[in-house]
Each structure stands twice: as structure tokens, then as C-alpha cells.
Length: 186
Image (cartoon, rainbow, N blue to C red):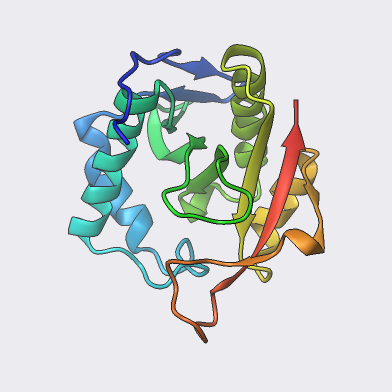
């Protein structure tokens, strides 16, 4: 199936403390540092190498070019520091809830516990529902990722145990294969 290319629907979003913006080349190195942090990557198969982080960076930019939306780079307004990403994307695997648009986030651990993921994700959900006119947004993680699950719940997302699934990109028996799914409707 040929992918359609769309111009970005939105160049940036601002909240009280955050600027959600397009990715810049200067984000590559701090993004590599975030993705190499074992705390940040605790619920992923492994921390990312610089090359794997750069590939993710490139995929995030390409998602915008292809779909008109994607994971936004997040900048702290008070000091203009790049601190991670928050955004919407189309998961690149097949599952019972697909097709879907996922909301996700990954922030440097120094910025956890300050409500920044929730603040940025609320703005992203408004953008998804009001501008993109999405009917539903999903999010998923491993059951043990209580921090992300708390963000999902504070966003008003709901979890139904019958929606849990085995992530198809992880082999049978992998300790991170089982995932919980959260949903929110417009």
C-alpha cells in the first residue's frame, strides 16, 4: 500500500512550560543520551545505541512527512532544553486494535515527576481530537510500567483487561512481551 505524504498539520504546540516542536539536528545527541539511559529504557528490550537512536529520530521526522503528524520534540520553555518527545503516531505492527493512532512520550529522567508528560500529552490529545479529528487514541506499555500507566490514567484513558496483548515485535517468552492497552475517545 502506498503511503500518502502530507504537509505537517501543525508546526508546534505550546503549553505553560513546554514547546512541542519539529525535530532539529541539534536534538540528535541529547536524544541519544535519553535513549541510552537504562532508567528511561527500563521497559524496552534494551537501551538504544547511538545508531538506533538516530534511526528512531529519522523515523519520527519521516512520520510527520508521511502522515502530517507524529512525535514532537519537547523543549522546556524556561531554558530551551530538549527533554524528549511527546506525540501521536501510527504503530508499525499488527494487533487487534489496529488501525489506531498511539500517543506516546519519552522524557529524560531528570524531568520525571514534574507533570510534564501529562501537560504535553493533554495538549497532544486536544490537537489529535480537535485538529486531526481522530475518533480514538490508544497508548500501551508493559503492565509493570506504573509511571506511564499513571500518565495514561490522568489523561482520562481507560484500560480494559480484555484489550491486553502480546507485542508482536518481541519473541514468545520475552518478559516485556505482554502489554496493557489504554484508550480514550473524542
